[in-house]
Image 1 (cartoon, rainbow, N blue to C red):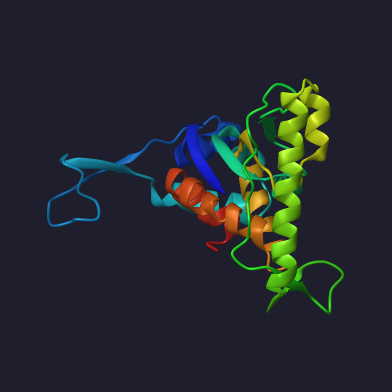
Image 2: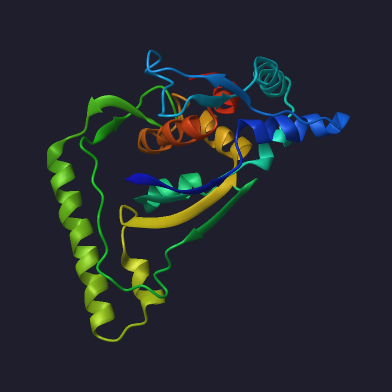
Length: 230
């Protein structure tokens, strides 16, 4: 499973100015002197640009008071790769996001299977989710053989002339799929906050944590404000 950055639009300053336009105002970067004695800031130039303190406070205010629209003016595109059962959890997030996925109506390459490092037992105190206790490896071995037979059946169907759009229905849900996913920063923060909750599926949570690295670097002030720095 992985998430790869493709492209983005805007910055923390874009969020600020989307909000300040309400008062017909516009802010700009603050340019500060940088020396080699500041290794965390030094980038080879004599100055660097940073968000003004007043603008950072504005972003905090917007996030804490539910003013979501300024955060919808910056977007990020990423390419995701995950098993189908994880992808189907994530595709439920639709608002502010656009999703285009590899289609096995057109693609008939050999499917790639994903396996967990550890199979988990069901949790006794909830209707969904899992415990930290490991599930029997004997069952896991049987399931592995079952899934591999499904892939073999798919390959046989395609090789013998069955149309890919029907052959795909024999594939298991741990087949890896890929999609391009683009959305506003506010939408990404909503995905992150919901899918990193302790009650979320562990595999989904593991994948979504990648957003912290991507969005957190692109929009450090806004992302921290929207996700409460978690």
